[in-house]
Length: 406
Image (tube, rainbow, N blue to C red; front, side, top):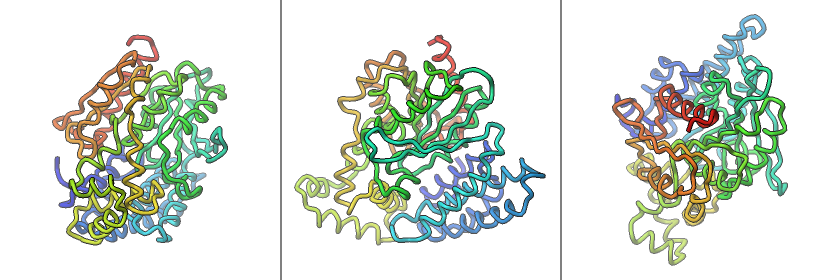
């Protein structure tokens, strides 16, 4: 694939933003212009390039008369939201950085401006966890057709928002006559900011209230509720399905069996030993040095900073301890529903994880492991950049499941 940056991590994130163009989330030309301004390994240059673009598109959109030009206004506001999210992406190393909150306020405002103007207008709601310990922000998009219809629940992963899910999966589901219900739980962007909560491994605590809400809606067929998890969401959605029988089918894009192992396995033996021995200071020192060293690969510097922030870990030692809880060992065999496991050929984050999930889900009534190939432009993590093709494969599978054909 053509490289969009000499920095592998920046290349992937630029491609990720470009991929949103399939559903009004970006324009190719302006993203490529912004990409030219980004310097390898320079997080601040990434922020500056996308913030400048976001502010420009934000001004353009706000200057439009939304009553007179609703489609144009909607498209501009959706793009602005995407670019503000991109500007925020590499900033989480300093929790006190005010841009973490200000950029999110701007992306939320822009997306909210677009919601009522969508072909299927979105309705925001806030749900309560059953134990009352956290709230779950969600957006419901109805087909707008009479009667009850299949509904797809959608959650993002380690670093993404429910707004992004509209562009990746939501619009395609609506085009196929499905309702869409996106949501976020602890550790994900809105909950982390507004409720100061990091990730939790028992994701059924998030999903069951979402299902409760879905079955309360007149538009929803309670026997045809699917669930899609994206990236780390492949673990989250799979874990929840093992404990939530009202979910009829699960799509793990891509499959994740042991999220903790993806962080622990690459560590040098001495660091693994320090973790096992509880040598907190040694672990913290080595990662503090790595993050401060500009020669450390961007992906490593970003991942441990994002990990600390999203897990709300006091230090690097705590993050590497917490992340080990995120495994489907002893859980995957409890997934009884049909399960679609995506496996991107060149996945740089979770290689081998999809196969492990597929192998372990021994009780699934209909298990498919689909290998997305680089030759089809679908080999990147989560097949980023191949949304039309990926959605064709995934939603055709859901259609067959809902219609009882598989």
